[in-house]
Amino acid sequence: MSRPLTVLVTGGAGYVGSFTVRALQEAGHEVVVFDNLRQGHRAAVQAPLVVGELVDREAVFACFRRWRFDAVLHLAAYTSVRESVIDPNKYVVHNVGGAIVLLEACLAYGVPHVVFSSTSEVYGEARYLPLDEEHPTEPANPYGASKLQVEQYLRWYDAAYGLRSISLRYFNAAGAALDGSMGEDHRPEEHLIPNAIRGALGLQPFRLTSPLVETPDGTTIRDYVHVLDLAEAHLLALEALRRGHHTDVINLGSGVGYSTRQIVELVQEITGVRFPIERGEPRPGEPPVKYASYAKAARVLGWRPRYGIEEIIASAVAWHSRFPHGYPD
Image (cartoon, rainbow, N blue to C red; front, side):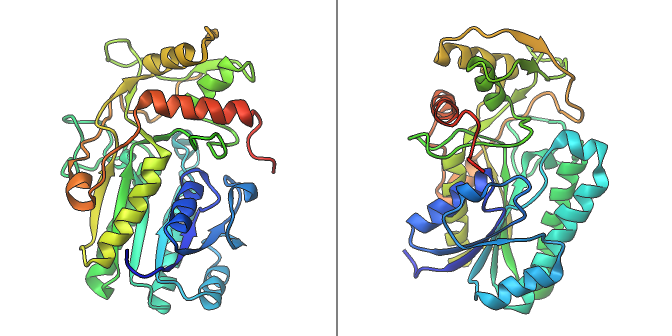
């Protein structure tokens, strides 16, 4: 491996961020976390933590003055599709505006590489499947649009200033540490797998929020990728940039789609609990079917998913069973 780096991870107290921080540390890198703790958790971080907002230019620049970063992994963002439809301005101000402040700091302090946490929401409704990186980008909600805007700015910043980046378009992050020590803890939680598990454990009623769509069972189909696989991909993307790879976008998914109903049935099977299913308010801005081609990730990064859907759900069950109320903060 190349020499150890000092890496800033924005959003490093969040779900994917905290796993990425741990992976970086296990690879021998020094990590600093910048997070506002609105969605992240102090208990998920075992690294120096700067609490602040990316839109606060002085706080961001003070962080860059204190440490000399070799690279930035930018995972901080508001990520709720539902909320973005209700309050799009929040997503422009923080997701786009915060990224611009961060990129300004990278230029000012000579940081050469950025790995950006993007999303499959940039694609919108699928014109063909599986979705590859050449698919048109027509986001169906402001969250996806905010991520796509940052991707475009990253291309422009490379062309103008030579700041190289890889944008990782996640499909549905899921799962937990295999020993149940780390996991997903959003408040409120909008994601299917943790909500179904919480229903099975009797922690809350389970409400089906998938809109009625034209799929075989009438529920949305999504591609679930283990958070451990996503964390590994960030390290591989960073190494690719260090080898000289150009600014790029890369999908991260399993290549397989599961319907909402199939996921609920798998949770019931793995937990052994046939919990009741209530009808909730359908989530707005949801395309009916999405699953990825990860051929480019395999070719460019040498990455492929290691964990299947049963392992994803089993690890999440272990986390929620061990920490039914999430992190202790």
